[in-house]
Image (tube, rainbow over all chains, first blue to last red; front, side):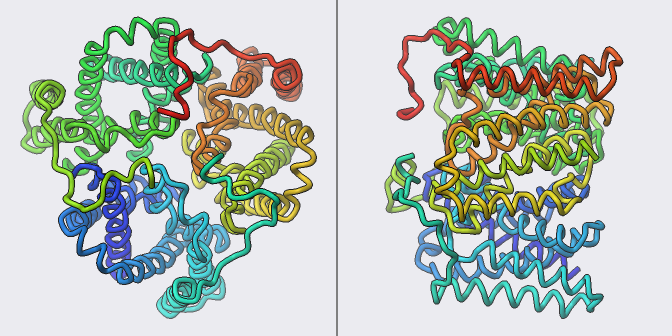
Length: 209
Length: 209
Length: 209
């Protein structure tokens, strides 16, 4: 029950990010809805395929469709509002990240993956939607370059896995995992924490390569 | 039997679109065959993964490979002919769209998905091949922007789902679904029917973003 | 046992190619690790999904994660060394190609696919990692254009399938498949063997389209 509510909330937040991208790319209404849907459910679909939970929740539970369509319509008709509230969107996105890190890892553990693999899959669940959104709109996935995004997800997922491995109760473990993830992500947003880039003689080849 | 024939016909038509793209991108013979294969089977593979039909038809039935290779060779050695018959290709593509909308939805229903989710999956089956083709060749998926493409697929898939839900016989339902899909797609091609784009102050950022 | 060692060796080699790409694209340490992981395991994950081997080896066996992380760290901290040894990397990559062609086909046969489909899936296993790496970093997959890459994989996979079909013993068949694949790939690297491109009046539209 709590799991479902957290998973749907994270789906909504990610779908908003997809809808916003679709509007910026000048897609029509349907295209915006598609990118919102993809951003919201791609991570969960990948997770469910990996653990054999077929059909994936996104095709088994109409709530995921309803939530992403609502997010898509919000993004389409209120894009000027969303542009104005940039920081709240970043915060919502950080919240979604933490929720998915926890729920993805929990579901993978429930399907029998080892703690290490469950943490890996929990992280992939977090970043899958954003990667699919970026590829659909032809951008190098931001998660590959931006500040502690996937690392925060991995830390939260790892905390949930370690708690499971130690036999700790589920609820405090989930809270700790979400907290660690949120802390790292906020430090990255507000303090600019980041990882190093390899020392090479080349300049950025991202645009010219 | 009829299902198989329709599914193979749709696969062939989509594979032609992939082969044509591959030739335009100056891929070698093998690259053209790969893009043709991907365009033809990606939607069906995704559908089969979602409903747990493993191995997917594309890896279980050699006819899909034969049909896509035939389409790829046609596209490679007769690309000048295909360029000349632009409208027939669009019409074939519209026919393939309708066939996949019907067969994708029927298969999803047969595997126990609810009518709403089956319609969603039927639509994804239709657009999956085109999206994969566009991503492989680095283009923003045309389905996200072009005129009533996915909407026509969704309408056709929805009609099949509603017919199933009401307990109507399968054949007339399939015909109605295909007819609705074809009508919307043709109206879009010949009359320019389309969906609105969100009102924003920005200009198209697709090329510069 | 031998199968596992060959599969891990191929994973390591492909992960190096992903890490090198990530460094060139100026990704941070984590991004480099992600691209290395994707390049190493994407082909195998696709293969395992197609044959219903769930969870895929990449999420069931920590060695795949260890090997790709090791390759990612090597690529990140020793990128200048790798740039200097261009030919060895090409040779390692060719070795990885042959190993994946053999192991992918063998696993598909073991899960009951027909020889023709197993060869197809063996080839897809080979090129899946490279395609995923190229898409993540927004490049047209090199396999679609480069010299006998996928064709060499297909020839090796086909040899394994034909040997299985004829009831030949597994080990010599695997050696023959790997040998054919390696021969074609080396001829392509050193002699420039390649496939034809379709005759069209257009110039390359890859950059401008």
